[in-house]
Amino acid sequence: MPGIWKKITFSLASLVNIVSVALIVVAVSTEKWVTGKILCKTGVDLVNASEAELDKFKGDIYFGLFQGGKTKKCGLGSRTTKIYIFPRLVNKLNGGLHMIIILFLFTAIGFALVSLAFCIYNARKIPYQSIKGPLGIYLWNFFAGLFGIFGTVCFIAAVRHHHLTERVANFKEDIFQLVVLAEEYDFSFWLCVAGTATNGANFIVVAMSKIHFPKIQTKKPEEPTVTADDLLY
Image 1: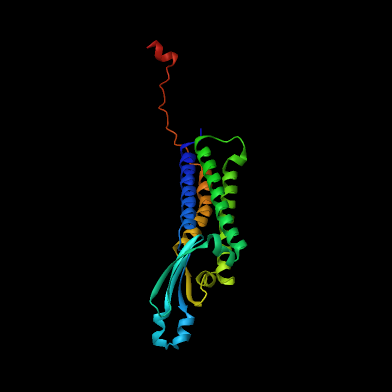
Image 2: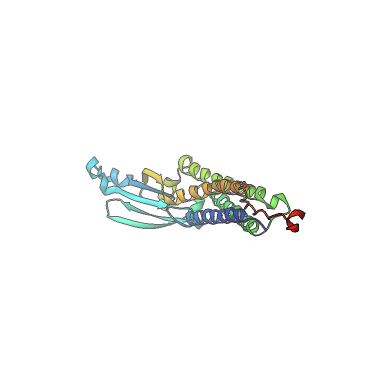
């Protein structure tokens, strides 16, 4: 059986893995990866709107990996539309890249779950093979963090280089053209970043299991010795 300190550190590592999985799952399932401001360019051009009138044509957009929403203003009041990435919109995006992002993140979740299983095993038993011990936990956390980074970087590339927000905003817009004025990564994206970073933090937690504390030794009281001379008296 592992010692008390190893049980504590591997139990803490298990908790860190649970947090990592929860953060990425919540990030994938929520809709605020990107939020932004959009302008109805067609409406502005039709009425030749002045600078002061532009606010009447500014709307909002937000979306995640699976769905989102937008509010556009094209001179006819606000109109809110729900956005679904699948099954049609993904064909208008860089579909291969979008699927790779999702695949990377689910792979990161899978490796984090494997690491969780190894942490629980090490908290209960002493492994006979090194791959089942801290070395294996390092390996699975490394892969979980690596695929999390891949997914995050690919999403940034989709936003910056493939104009993801603009493509999402203009889906099914046959009459009006929408222009992205501003965009920023929102809490869902940062949850994914935090979940990926948590895998790196687990390296430190598992390394703490190698710390050996000095054992407290209690000094035994000396027993009186009885000699032959003492017996004579």
